[in-house]
Image (cartoon, rainbow, N blue to C red; front, side, top):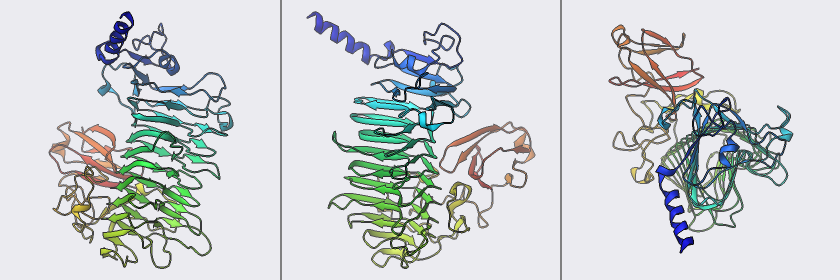
Length: 527
């Protein structure tokens, strides 16, 4: 009876959020290192992970944090059941909503040995095994993991966690490497949700697969991977520079993602065995392969009843740089159970007059070169606002504009019935079906934000490209109005209080939308 009573009390403690402890970590803290306040924060993330119990959470202030002060490459940050890990704090906050992740970069760095020498870096920066609850990792840069030998997943190695869900949110995964599988992430028998994350410059060895993400051993069951509002840029692998799976996904669901400037001899997105998969509202532009049979998107599932859907995506200006005869299409499906609808396939390297092999069921799409077995196929220029016009090569599409011009034949030309349930926003976060009929491609035409010669800018304010300044009328500037600048996938880049008629904007090349309460939105491109 005494043991039963103890277990009941323990369960109540775990489930009662009032009893949970918030631990603070700040690399520059000088207090008593109890972790209970910012003033007395731990200076090491491992110190917090070593004492947490289910229900606790860890807040980490801006700074650099390494898995160990030794040179033991096997040490990692090991995630715990029911313990969330948040970065991006200045070190004064009392509420999660007060964080500013952009202003407070919080870095988990695998460079534990000789600085700049990757050969002695941590094998896996973060590991998780047997997670049976939902846990969140939010607000970190995860960099310089290097998996070699039998290790996989330079940034994260996640295994045997189908009973719970691991949520990776607002993170940047940069310069991670695996000699074999999963330059940034290796998952096996895991439920993983990734939201608003950037994968940049991750890679595998010359024989490795999955430069950004690899789904491997599923002895514990088939994995689930959900990707939302993510950017994959400059990743490299032999196969699947961004994604590769050799074993089955129970569910693969990708929505509102950008794949650009990635390179591989064989494939950029390689989808193998699956039960169900959908890739929607996404932009795949500026990637290169270099092999006679290279593909930017390759769907290799051939079992009857395994369904892959490609819906409202734009796949344009991707190139196969192979010097001799090319023998395959940029987009390749291996089974007629696969479907493509409301998509743009244009300006890619052509194989035998086509850019998509003739296997999948294809409808309501713009396909350069046509698709004879499809229905409602347009073989025409989609009329992008500001597309790449250079020679075949890798490039970053975010400095161009792949929205549709007002004259585009893709506007209101799609099939509403093919829009996936829940995929009710376009790549920029705008609602779908704004004209009664869905547009073709990853962007939905919206006359309040569309730009180009056919659509005038909102009256009274504009972007001065020559001087890099936002220009507003005198009357409006005197109101101390707050404007928000968004990137093309909806991410907030800056919030600015207007106090003058001209405000300099320090922005990287790309497309932006400025929102201002009471005004039409303003879209512009920085070159």
